Length: 103
Image (cartoon, rainbow, N blue to C red; front, side, top):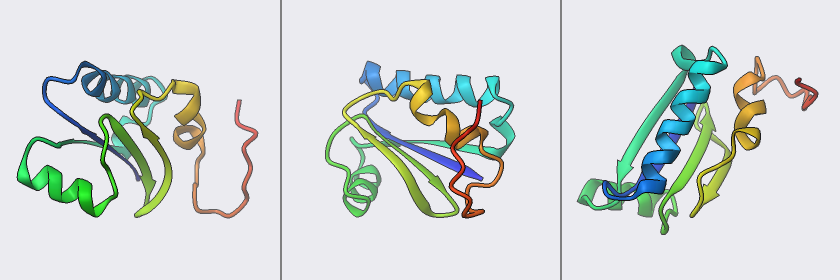
């Protein structure tokens, strides 16, 4: 399962856009059921603790993981769909094939 963590603040438009974009494209690509999308509020004690643990210091920060392994990270920006598309469309991220020739 792909896990996307968006670290942000409630009033941050870029943070909201990051969540909306990842949600939209996971649905468009038919991967919504196999994708977990979490918003971590960096204005709460729990959010700050999680951010410190994951080395997050700026918002928005978007972290994409598969089975606990970090695959990609975008700091202070909303990622373009082309930047995370292959991660969503690849059938098995841990197969070791390294094949990036998707679409």
